[in-house]
Image (cartoon, rainbow, N blue to C red):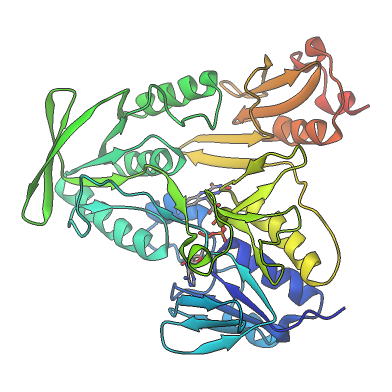
Length: 408
Ligand SMILES: Cc1cc2nc3c(=O)[nH]c(=O)nc-3n(C[C@H](O)[C@H](O)[C@H](O)COP(=O)(O)OP(=O)(O)OC[C@H]3O[C@@H](n4cnc5c(N)ncnc54)[C@H](O)[C@@H]3O)c2cc1C
């Protein structure tokens, strides 16, 4: 079956993976990709890691411009969609271009959360979400290294902590302020959060958790200081790492069902069957009936494949095991599965000093694994979770027993 004229709104991981899946099916010529950014779809994870540390590293595009041309995929870059007319099946771009569609895919991702106490446009307050942010931040960090300035991060989530580690490796003084009682919110277990805290302190980052931000002092267009737990903290440069909100404004404005993400079924269809949504912006129906919205490359890629099948007239519900990775200086953290609220935990030492995997089980079934610098064990752990096998805790925690042997 051929897809009909398809417009993809967004040019991130989900959009790139959808283009690749449809091109593989020989359907490139029917696709128009519209992105607010000026860059072709590129890899976002390096932006808080290697890209900041290497002055000459380029943005890593998923595919070169020539590939889109060869596939017949028309790209509209730097020209965001400003409205959707679902009745007429037309999207309108900021330039005034109107694109008719038979099928529309929203892949608009998230935007960085900001702080009400800080007016937009302050010269020394930033977020890190896209290539434009990363290019400007890299320049600024290098100036700060030369002038001995300190970087302050508000928020101890993945992006903030990756950035903290990169900045330390560049030689900057770094402080992290987290209002929650632990790092990484509820994305990881308490044990891993504690390990991550110790890791950052060992890198020389000053990390404060459970803080109260009592006020912000502005001078002109700059943030001069913050009042934290009764103390004045001078600010040279602040990066907000306080999470992201799903970019659902277009969807809401055209009347699609939205609730912390564009609501989609397991085949990525929104409340209008002619419109799909994928990636960070989509809140999907999981197999157990729960509504989930995930922010990860895996989720964007796998949902794109499910959406491609839907566009091609096949039903391939999204049922992939969620997994995620994060690199914070020399520490590589990998997670597979969703952390259950109540579970039994078991620790397995890894092959190298300081490496380990923490397993979470319920009724003998492995549901989630969190690994620190243990990529091989993690790969097997993922397979064990996917296989849904019951495992023996003794065997799981004995590094002399290969995890592969537990697959049965
Ligand atoms: C710095 C950073 C580091 C990360 N590191 C990791 C990591 O190590 N591992 C991991 O798994 N995940 C990581 N992530 C998360 C991962 O990048 C996202 O989950 C993934 O990019 C989601 O893909 P997406 O296509 O849904 O959204 P995005 O990649 O965010 O793309 C959305 C796109 O839509 C565009 N858009 C929005 N509105 C419009 C509009 N109206 N018109 C046109 N275009 C529009 C945006 O400009 C953007 O280009 C990281 C994210 C960031 C920012």
